[in-house]
Image 1 (cartoon, one colour):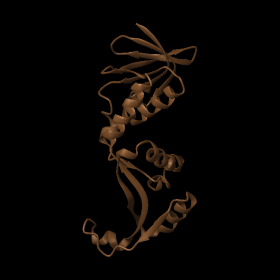
Image 2 (cartoon, rainbow, N blue to C red):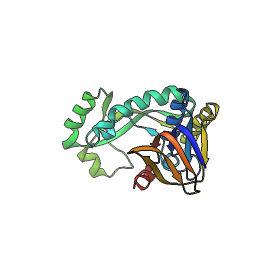
Image 3 (cartoon, rainbow, N blue to C red):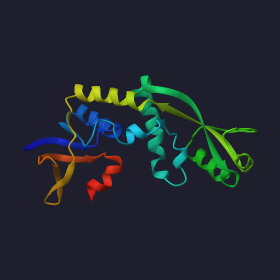
Image 4 (cartoon, one colour):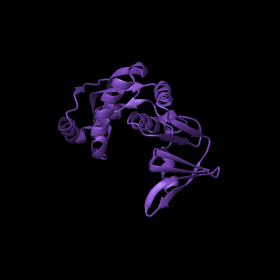
Length: 205
């Protein structure tokens, strides 16, 4: 059976549903394919922190601005799902602190150094060899975000196939034109977005 969509999204986690919602709001006909249940992968396993970007500044600088944008986006879209809004404490080795602070200033991340005389959870050696920086970050309920996104997607007529696995990508004339499912269906789409988290590498392989 062949079916036609503007965009097929593989993966029904927060990333997949948010992509589906935004494209459907632009008038696209969207299909979301998920091998398990909605939000059963990385979305269900994460701890809900929307990072400031500080965690990635040194080794993954290309995603820092995306983190900053995500904080604003999640605050406006999912206010009711926010569990905690406050400051996280980042532990930085003393010899790395100058570079870390310079990066914070480069990305305009508000921060304050915290003097920690005693933190029961930390070994005393870490206290002596580290500096502590307070940075604003928020924690959200992934379950509630999924509920909000799913209701918006359904209201925008996003279609879903759950419990079926993507067996391959349809390619014609060197262009992606759809997907093959394990159930035997071929579904055609002008675009295919892979939002499958840890399953992405297997699909592309």
